[in-house]
Length: 300
Length: 229
Image 1: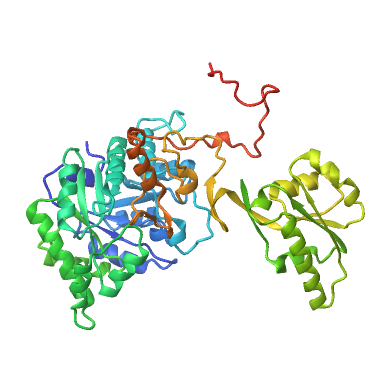
Image 2: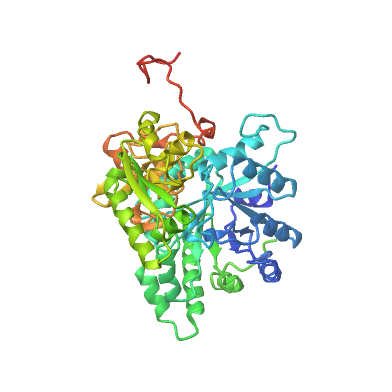
């Protein structure tokens, strides 16, 4: 039996659509709930980020519980930046107990890029080790080999960077993640189709599902900012130039257009098993993107 | 070697303020080489403190100076015996080990740190030092082409680069090389990439029950060349 609705869909022939919501910065979660309600039936699953870019926010697990309460399918993001192996295991047991079984295992951004630069970076583990840790819990023991009373079940994912400027070490790490038990990958933002095609050719030797990461940009300025400040992201000049052609106040509309076109191509070529839409603060336009990409439908 | 940086004069002035007679104590090893606390820096700081006192008009400190060959070695600390009897505090320009060694030896005496001990490293060029060792107690340089991921990767991760690396640089700083890109290239050159393909479990932090202690097994010290059973 599938461990989650997402897992069931991963092994169907469906073209999957996932998206992500950045949790609230503060105790007022109304906007986040609004975004969940807006998206839960339009996508197959919603990631709730874990202090993305090392900026302190409402926790991923809290957001995942909200997604469940509202009737959606959550993906818990777990990074190794803030928790050691004891805390990571406890969080995973808790997630399972509350019906959150989809887990995206990440190393986590550097503390230096965030808003608590003086905090202690934990990194007791990395993403590969975290995947193994989750699989170890499933097998009925904790990471130190002690017997568990009841074992959890997870559908595990991770990330990969198909457009890294030095791809070989990234592929080597990808292999390790697959061997460690990753079933699906949500890629970093893709812009360069030839690079994505090359990556997919490589990835097709493994029995894993690849959801291409689609970043929705609100302006050429935002694209440049991301190039400067967001780890691992490189928006090509051609995309920046296209965003710059937008009329004043219509940057986001252009961004939606660019994102939708990319998604459409990926789907029509059958290049990946799905897409993962990252709207970075513009979650409200995700339905428009899906509409423009021809991917709008009820996915409950 | 241990690399340290001298504290700002303001902070040093605040530390020594309660004490009338202060011995500025240099150290002849690492901090001499990195220019933070050797004989030269002791003398320079001595003058700087005198000038600052004169300027502020409220300084009545009697300052003296001396530089030991090594502050972290009890043998050398004997040489201090006659020099600390008539001081109220020692301002040590040694690393944190030296400060504590002096403090342990002369228990009645406040010992103040004049430098911030930064890391273990080596000079890149004059005036620039780079961290190279985290003293993790479980050296794996044989598997990483002689490049330490624990020290040189900002996350200290063991199974390859994170996705934040760009143009061979680290996501934490564009000035910093990505250790894992370097490790990959080095291993490739050595035809040892297989060692990077291997899975490495999380570090064993039990090799670091703090504070650590090493007891030599024989008077010769160190490894006698025999393989452990």
